[in-house]
Image (cartoon, rainbow, N blue to C red):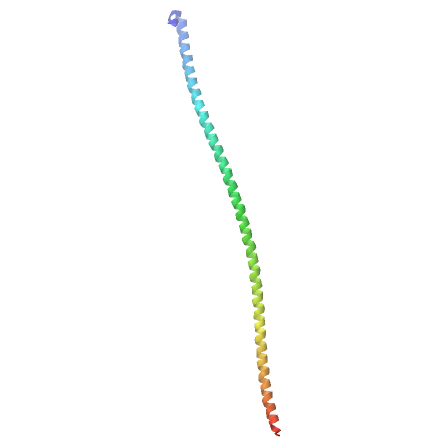
Length: 134
């Protein structure tokens, strides 16, 4: 009503006042939407930070597991080398035993040959001694 009394200028002021009120309401609504968006962004940032921390923790566990696995593989390699060394020693012992067995077999053959020769000589000597009867 005040604007109607003021005339043409009052109507212009009323239009401007209405526009200012409308802009203020839209600004308040936009500010409220921005506040909601900021809150949502903070929540997402917080969640992302938690996920990053969880990922870092998981990576540390993986690295610890890899270190343990590396130690176990090293122990297996050492044990394999020791086992190979033991097998080599057993192989050398078996070879040495085989050589000893072959030498014993050769000596047995030589003893058999010597025994046969002594038996022949014994028979010959018996015949010769048999010639001298008392």
